[in-house]
Amino acid sequence: MVEGKKVLLGISGSIAAYLACDLVRRLIKAGAQVQVIMTAGAKEFITPLTLQTLTGRPVIQGLFDEVKQWDVEHVGAAQWADVFVIAPATANVMAKLARGLADDSLSATFLACTKPKVIAPAMNTAMYENPATRENEALLKKRGCLIVEPQSGLLACGDTGKGKLADTDLIFQHIEYALQKEKPLQGISLLVTAGPTRETIDPVRFISNLSSGRMGYAIAYQAWLLGAEVTLVSGPVDLPPPPPCRMINVNSAAEMAAAVLQAAPSAQIIIKAAAVADYTPKIKAQHKIKKQEGELSLELTRTTDILAALGQQKQPGQVLVGFAAETEGLLEHAKAKLIKKNADLLAANDLTSPGSGFGVATNQLLLLWADGKSRELALMTKEEAARQLLLAAREIWQNKNTI
Image (cartoon, rainbow, N blue to C red):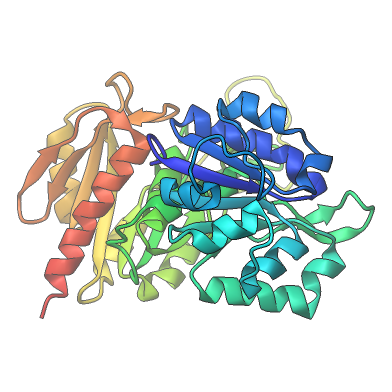
C-alpha cells in the first residue's frame, strides 16, 4: 500500500520524537520515500543527522534556511508528498495547525499541502484533555485529518493517563488508510470471525487447533482500509490488535456462537474465517484431572454450527461468506458446504498445499459462488487474498441490494 509512495513526516518537540525513527524504518522497509520536517523543539530531542541517515534525504528545518531541494521549500514539499504525517504532534503544533498559522517549516508546509493528513498527538494528559486541545483536535478532524489518538499509560513526566504516542504500527496503518483513495466498502457494516476456539477439559487443559487467526485479522484490516465498519470476533490468538474496529474477544465455541449471532443482524456482510471447534467435552472437570494407569476417555458433544445458523437466519440483502479448510476432496467438500450452509460465497483452501492454511503468511484460495461460478486465486499474502475476497463479497452485496 505504501510502496512507491512519498511520505512527508513532520516531527515536533515531544519526548516521543525518538519513536519517529521506528516509523521511518517501517515506511522505508515497506518501500516508501520519506522526507522529514523538524521543528526547532524536535531537534532538542533527536538530531536531524539521525533522520537524514535513515531517510537518505536532508531534513527540512528552519523556514528561512538555505534551500536544498525545492525553489520554495514548504510549497515544493507539499506538492511532492502523497501523504503528510505529523508524529508526534504537540499541543502547540496542533493549535497552530487548527488555527492556520504558518510561522515555521512544518506549519507552513501543512497549510500549503492539499494531500491526505495523518496526525498522531503526544503530550501530557492534562494538556491533551484541556478543552482547547480537544477543540483543536475536533477542528482538524472536521477538516479531514486522520487523528491517531494517543494511548494511555505511564508518561515521561511521571503522570499516568492518555497522552502517549500511539504505537508506530497503528500510525503506519493509518498512513495506509489515508493512501487508500478508493473505499468501495464505505458505509458497509462487516462482521468477521478469526482464530481458533478453546474447549476446556479441566482448569489446565483444552482442545483447540492450529489456527493462528492471521487470515481473519487480514480480512478485518483490509475491510477497514476499504472503508467498512468492522466488528471482529476473535478467539485466543497471538496477534497485535487490528486497527480501529469493534473487537469482541472470546475463548470457546459457545462464546463465539453467542457473540456472532448477537452481532449478525446488524451486519451487511458476514465472513466466518474462524476455525471453530466442532466438538467440546461434555463434562468439564472442575479440578485438574490426575494422571492414572490405563487410558483416559473423553466424551465429546457437538458445538453450535455457527455458519449453518447464520445461513438459516440470513436476512434479505445480507451476504454470508464461509471458509472451508480441507486436506482432501477440496472442491467436492467446498461445494457441499456452500450449499448446506446457505452461504453466498465460500473460500476454500487445501491445508496440504505448501504456503496455504494455518500458521503461514500466505494463502491460496478457491472461491466458490452460490450461482456455480468459481475462481482459483494464485498463492499470495493473506492480506492480498483478503482484499480479493472482500471485493468479491462486495460485488455480491451490490448485486443483492441494487434496486
